[in-house]
Amino acid sequence: MQPRRYWNGNALRTRLFDGLSLLLPAGEEFVIRAAQDWLDTHPDADPRLRAEAGRFIREERSHQRAHRRYNAELHDAIPVAREAEQGVTAAVGELDRLGLRMRLALAAAFEHLTALLSAEVLRGEAWVDDTPRRECRMWRWHCAEELAHQHVAGDLLRSMGPLPGQRILALVLASVYLAGDAFSLTWTLCRHELRQGFVGRRELLAQAGRFAWRAFPGLCRIARGWGGQWLPAAR
Ligand SMILES: [Fe+2]
Ligand SMILES: [Fe+2]
Picture 1 (spheres, rainbow, N blue to C red):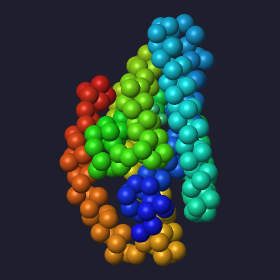
Picture 2 (cartoon, rainbow, N blue to C red):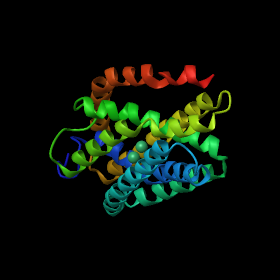
Picture 3 (cartoon, helix red, strand yellow):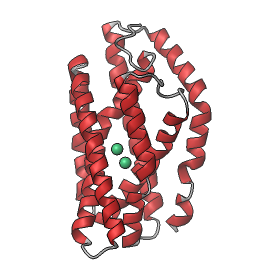
Picture 4 (cartoon, rainbow, N blue to C red):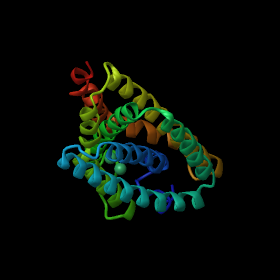
């Protein structure tokens, strides 16, 4: 293992969060557009809600800038990362064809899932090392802001009145989408590391096993929180 190459302890955990970072600029663009469209179409909404939406957009924009810088470095280190991110951006762009209510339902679902993961990242070191390294600090800053503004997209949706079953449908779609992309991006990056000989197959498997063991309690909490207060509101 090359310690400088892996800011998060080892290849598996580093490339997992690098893969998530590749997802984020496009995902954040999606939630920003949904919130901005809500602002544009609801000029007479509660001023407090409009202010919250504005703050939400500003925070997501600053996350987006940070992750674009981070991803540019990743593209240099791992050329396949650029192509992978472009694929994600094109796929997320397709979601813009949906109506505003469904886009807000998806945005609220993404924010809910992000908040569940953020809580685990901030809980200890099972997911992200707690060191002064730039990458670790960036993830902890991002996760703290995600926890603080997790309710905003849901509040915007509530102001429009979601259609019956829309929230649960959005949650299922967002979960499948997020889990599938996180897995495939992590695998793309890990496969590069294997091919370049930066890590061996057995070592990578051992890292995955150790990570699964440490993250298991957090994964259980995420599973419990998945439906959370969401399902009753879906009716
Ligand atoms: Fe964000
Ligand atoms: Fe967010």
